[in-house]
Length: 340
View (cartoon, rainbow, N blue to C red):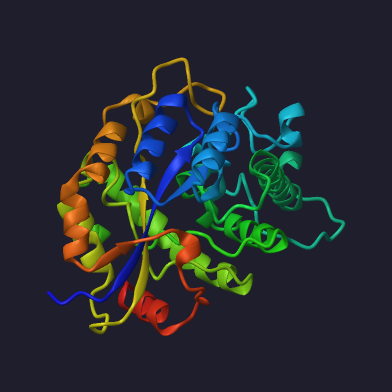
């Protein structure tokens, strides 16, 4: 197979989640296997992670979090429609279910001065403000920790591409002068038979949301890589063969010799040891499992690096990529050929 020249950003998510996660991420970066990280500013070790990023000059973006742990904005001091009665975000699926049920109606609406049937705490304009307020607080906290803007902003558990949320997210990034985000559109997810049914359904839902987020992201001038992989290679499912295969699917139909950019989402690290870690509720089961260590080993072993080199893939940081506007030929071709 004749591969086009590919520049691949390998992003380690959840930096700042716990000491052992951060240790593994830094190890992967120093080994040249990870080229970018996304920081959870509400993570238990956000401050020490920021110190590590400065010390090792790690390209760092913000992992915007609206689904796990405690907020960093004003909502932490009182009631918010984004939080449970205990003061925590609603969770990975809970937040999605609330958005789908219109309990979190995040789209902007014009105030009409009339009474609504929606319960007062769920007024869309209030919720839109609350999401924007929390995103602004996390962007400000990142600036405090790192002393600069993030290289990019993506979403913890892909909340940034959810309907309505993506519009508020895009506007916040535009206001803060952040140009790069993640568009988790991965080709061929329906054919990834190794994914368990719930994981495949979740990945396909993320892909559908990402497709719908293209418009709001484009209108705000956001940019992203031409291709994305990582939904089919998360945790136990990561291998050199599957990463290579996911890139091959993403790049099908690309003219030989054409230069493309891609992002590999990864979650390397050493397993968390409770109670240390998390975003205010302690580490979750995935963080405590062997799957994080498995990703670390796959990323740092020579097999993957050799396979990528053989395929004509060059690792780089996000700031090394040429700026590309959404809507260029490569992105349009990808979106058209990815239609279900």
